[in-house]
Image 1 (cartoon, rainbow, N blue to C red):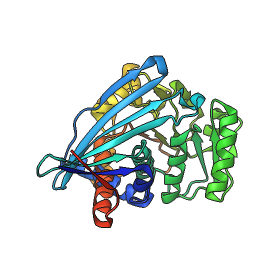
Image 2: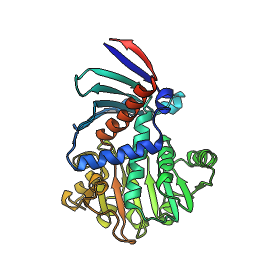
Image 3: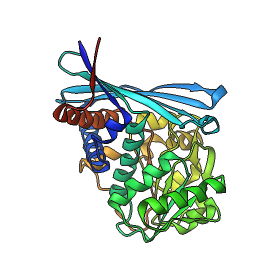
Image 4: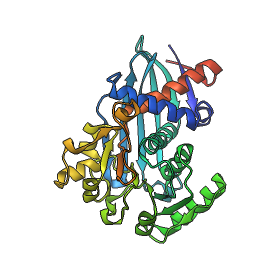
Length: 327
């Protein structure tokens, strides 16, 4: 049996951010319509090394392939001179069950589809005109989130804040040069939140860094850092003030911002307005008022991994990219 092998460089050349966003939006809609197979997430914590491992997978009905993805985040790695994230995707034939493709992308597709999910959420829930967008966090995903956001919104001003000011300053320099527009460093997370009407939180925080009293009416928040049970970025009371949208309610009840708000007795599962796919599929409207606060609680669903892997697999086959190994 022959298996195609792709490395990170090859993978990057086979899918664009625009393609990733389109495939993720379609996958969300199919999830809402019951047109996917989506198993629960397998999570492993390696606490001694501040590490986490996620195994996710999915199958979109009618697709020629299904996928299983493993992604890791080891947060001591920068001190070792190593990237924080790694991982790969295993793509199987949905006809024979045979392994067709191994994508050794060092976690690139995970970062790309997570950013794409944030863009879908912002497009469906944020105000059309954004005066100030604020990014809380200065890591890799904070970069992907901002780049993806700019596909769907053109904020007049962009702020960044992080718990380590030096990281925020480095982010601002790098992203200003990359995007060709000024990124300002806010004096604090509170200052950023109070000034922004679109906020992205992209941190590994395990206690709230955004408080309810700071958030102004009309604000949209995309919260994507809380993807294992102990992590959280938002004060529970904030969810009580907001229209809450989740990527998958069963996941968010165990490892999302929703999980913490339910545990605190602030909201219940019945208070969740929608899964994001319901809005993407046109089953429910998104923002219905210029003054409502909207929150997208994103924990990462495996059908997004399958969707972007399908794009890569199709492109690799059509372009003849990669090399073969014998199994």
